[in-house]
Amino acid sequence: MSRPKKIRRSEFEAVFVEDWEPVTLQDDAIPSFARRLAGEVSCTFIASGQTLASVPYVLRGVPDATLVGGIDVWRDSPDDPVAYNKDWYAVLASETDPEVLFVDGPQRDAEHWRDAIPSRYADAKVIGGNDDGHE
Image 1 (cartoon, rainbow, N blue to C red):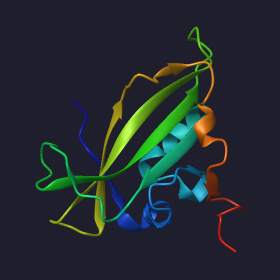
Image 2: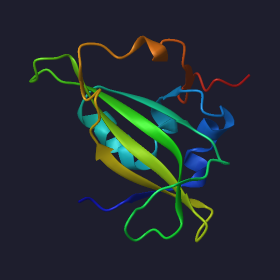
Image 3: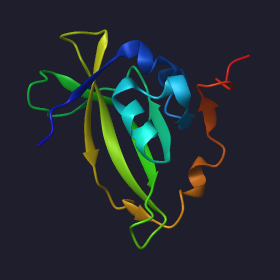
Image 4: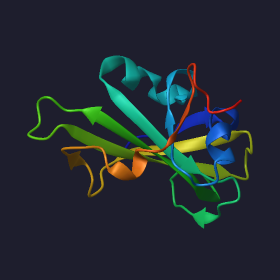
């Protein structure tokens, strides 16, 4: 079992602004824990969330955790029989430290092995890099 990762709330704030609408994270918008992944293999980071979410989530070492978002990490998988594999990361808030978010993952779900990234993400706003989605 991996230990939860920590990120500053400010690293996810641009995602929260979109109120559960999926966004594609690029460059400086990729949370710090995942930047190493982006350097190792070709990845697409898609996230969504909301600050007011209050779904309880049990995570050892994180009291009063609530699920406030998620990050799908789609990686090219040239060694697999499919084009992509996906891991999901839960993004959690805790009243103990409101400036810190916890990230639990990677977790596999039914979409772990896919030949294509689902079309539901086709119109996702891009956040980060030169196109941060803001005027």
